[in-house]
Amino acid sequence: MSYWRKTIKPLLDDETGTMFKQAPARVTLAFPNRYSVGMASLGYQVIYRLFNNVDGVACERAFLPEDPDAFEATGEALPTVESGRDAGDCQLFALSVSFELDLTNIIRTLDLAGIHPLREKRDDSDAIVMIGGPLTSSNPYPLTPFADVIAIGDGEQIVPVLAEALREATSREDFYDLIDGTPGIFLPARHSHEPQWATAPKELLPAYSQIVTPHSELSNMFLVEAQRGCPRPCTFCLARTMYGPNRNNQGQELLDTIPDWATKVGLVGAALSDFPHTKFVGRTLTDRGIKLGVSSIRADTVDVELAEILKAGGLRTFTVASDAPSERLRQWLKKGITTEDLLKTAQISRDLGFKGLKVYMMIGLGPENDDDISELISFTKELAKVNRIALGISPFVPKRHTPHFQDSFAGVKTIEGRLKRIQKELRTTAELRNVSAKWAWVENVIARGGADVGMAAYAIYKNESIGAWKKALDDVGWSDPYESNESRIELPAGQIVRGDYGDHNHDELAGRKVSSHAEGLAI
Image 1: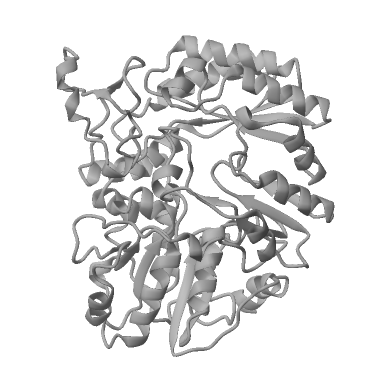
Image 2 (image 1 turned 90 degrees about the vertical axis):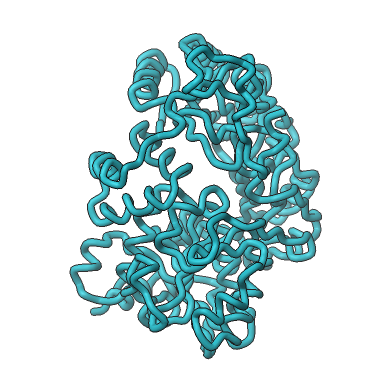
């Protein structure tokens, strides 16, 4: 029995909203991770619908198998979900990428689809390979050895241009000519720098789900985008820069996109408690008996009314972000969350009968020291006196297009030492879940790397490990240009002492070169 019939067809049969179409121009929209992860991506679903809504263009999906090695051993070509055709049998093979650590998965997906991963090894007989998604806005450069086209920004602006070019182009170069110069279109064979990003006008929003499935990470949940962008000035976050200016949708506008058959609705946005219609939309949905999910709530805007709506929507554990282990570091990051805000949220969660409070935070920030970790431990014990606490701890990974793009990574040894201390002192106080410091280092390399990092990934994409990454990076001659840079709390976030200024001369700080997309955030 084929992989499609045995593994994919049962998933297809359980979907609601699948689009079946045949047309002269065929697009494969691949997600370089397993089906359940890809189907939880609202952006992925929007691109699928946008292509299929264009006359003369048909789009089918493909996903990286759960066990790529076992699939490869079958000798089959990667199939599309809708029809089971070979995923590489198309004019445009598009990948939507959300995470830095999916870099090797991109290469594996191309390989399994029968497409040579390296751009320079392909010719006019091959599908055009396009890569889009959040990763391309964050850092497209490691993708340049693989992509013919890199799409950066809002797909609502980019897809119509691509679709028209697919219908009209008579050759690969003709296709490039038709899309060259379009905002958001980066052609690695022609361009050395990323272009102006594509930004969709409010009239093309909101984004909403096309397919609902029980096999998504967000099982049976219909997603709708409340806002795009973010009004907050948090210096570490890409939402304000990557998603463009903040665009709020109207409450009734969101409700009108939700089909009558939806039983679970997820509101998507960078700061939903800042969205002016969250309570109206949430109350309307819960009054209909619909379960409600939210992507992000800020502790400083939580009140009893909002918490009651979320509880009525089926939320059992309240989740907020601290994002830094101490008050001084939250101020440095312009987070705007205080210890009092977190205590208030814990008290509301307890009083309304929530099972607990989950707090996300980062460690390994530039000016962080042992006192900051002591404060984290101390206030977590205070929170635990109020309600059950779970801590989700991630190492800080500096990103391009934020003021922190030249900050040094704290280092695996430093982060592991701090995690060990936190685990020792809080093991009986809170549930602790942390991201691996070693894989956070790899994420840090990809987040600010160039084509050389992409080639390192190519060398190890079938046998990825931390050791393999280190060797591959050595082989391509990679070195960390930010390793000795120093962040200091008395400086605005994003203003650093360059590592080569051994005497830390403050007159030399003008060399910080904040990305144009992040200008103003470090002030």
